[in-house]
Image 1 (spheres, rainbow, N blue to C red):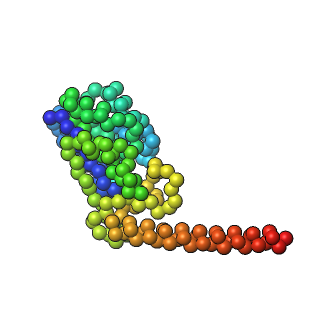
Image 2 (cartoon, rainbow, N blue to C red; image 1 turned 30 degrees about the vertical axis):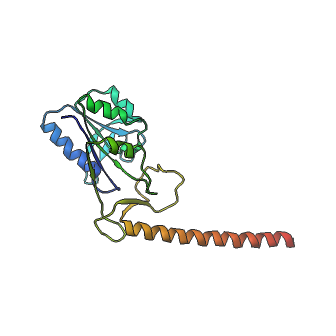
Image 3 (cartoon, helix red, strand yellow; image 1 turned 120 degrees about the horizontal axis):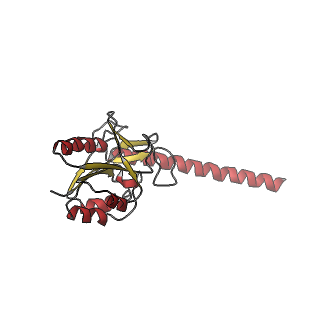
Length: 203
């Protein structure tokens, strides 16, 4: 049966592992399949998908959703879908024509905005599993957000070093702390500007 299955949630919730688990099942079922990943995601090497538990598999790199039309298989596996550009109606049409999809991706950016085309994808999905992670601040098992610890000037910063999964409460606390630091920095900048202006006038 053709359908669209989506695994989503914050980082470190096991989305990629879900892809691997289902891939094994489809192989046992004798299905012809192919694995895809965004070209921009080169964290674990080009054309490789890896899980945090140590599993890895070769994947075809694509930039846009419509590139899937160039490949004819029974089952399409796509990891890190949030990095792909294009129209999800391509996937909907392919599913209507008998193709099956298993897709993993972050549902939200670290600013809690819909990430890329993930929102559109979830609207056309037959099955959606929204997963949680372990909060790296309070260690609860209800982390639903991905938080960026540094400063960002773009939604897309590929890499794990400054990203952590957090629960709703810890996200709020971290944002408040960041806001307080920013206010102090702004205050110090204003003081320094006043001092510099006075020095210029005196000179």
